[in-house]
Length: 146
Image 1 (cartoon, rainbow, N blue to C red):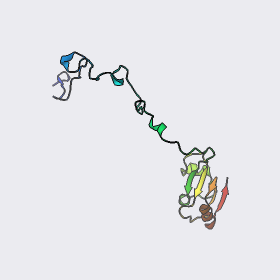
Image 2: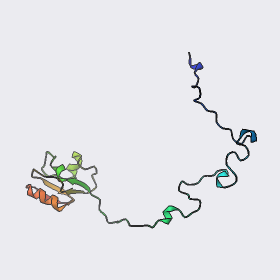
Image 3: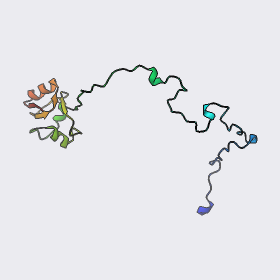
Image 4: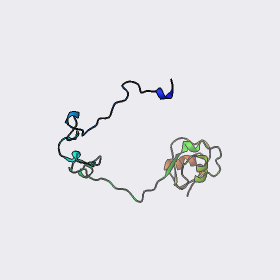
């Protein structure tokens, strides 16, 4: 056996259908495209969402809501995550970024109150929820809003 004698497995290769080759082939004349109409023409392509000229779905449905241009995006961090920090002297967004607690350096950080805090933490962030502020101060920590 050598590379020159390799053959496809029987039945695995099918010959392509040659269309438009006369009436005896079974797909002559209109070449399997039917009679007239948009899809019988050469270069016939239509967008996936085209509905044949009917009013499209995205125009039939009403528009709702709006985008608030004054919305502030925060990276959120919970109290339980702060409890995992070893070094708790002066926790800032930069420190949280270096330790991998937040993923972006230039997006404000908000501390939320999920979980319990066992250590006194001095933390600076852009925003705090009321419950987070209460839990940090109850544990003997200090809250600074940037």
